[in-house]
Amino acid sequence: MRCIPPLLASLALLVSACGGAPQPSERGARIGMSGDDTSGAGAAASAPPAVAGSVELALRLPDGAFIDVGELRGRPVMLFLFATFDAVSQMMLRPLEAFHAAHPEVDLIGVATQPDARLLIDAYVHALSPSFPVAYDPEESLPGDDTVLGPIEAIPALVLLDARGVVVARRYGFVEPPDIEAMLGAAH
Image 1 (cartoon, one colour):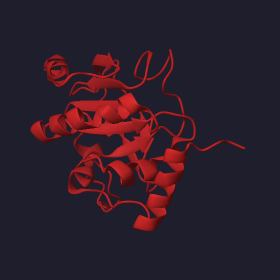
Image 2 (image 1 turned 90 degrees about the vertical axis):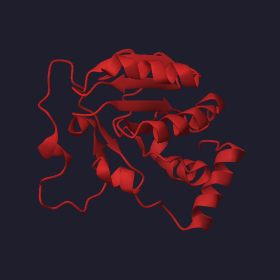
Image 3 (image 1 turned 60 degrees about the vertical axis):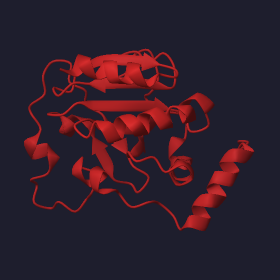
């Protein structure tokens, strides 16, 4: 039996008290999180074709929907790989919230990477209420030396994909706000 740290147990209680999973935000619906588009004319129809090195990664949201990173081609995508229990990952939320507000042209997605992330993600979202979608890799292939994002050596990590879906920048640990902004220059 796994030991659940007291903070996570408290977060789980908070989730149940708040009434379950959050609804996707308008920004989340814009990046393909909503299952409302039955026309087939969603993000996949407008995504440019893949090029050599384009990232194809399916991430699952707490409500069971998927974000297909490949369908987001055409716009830069910043992936925030984190662990829900990690203090440095939690410290990154404030600068990422500011970046997210200042750069609506960039799709920012949080990706919980610890084992069994699906069990903890609801509590994390309810407790910290990030303005960007938070998902997990159902394949549990992140982090590691040989991932679709290249080597992910540490958590937290920021991985920037350009509009073609190719990794153009990555940073590890706590990243200062000016350095997050500087990463964006690699996407142009």
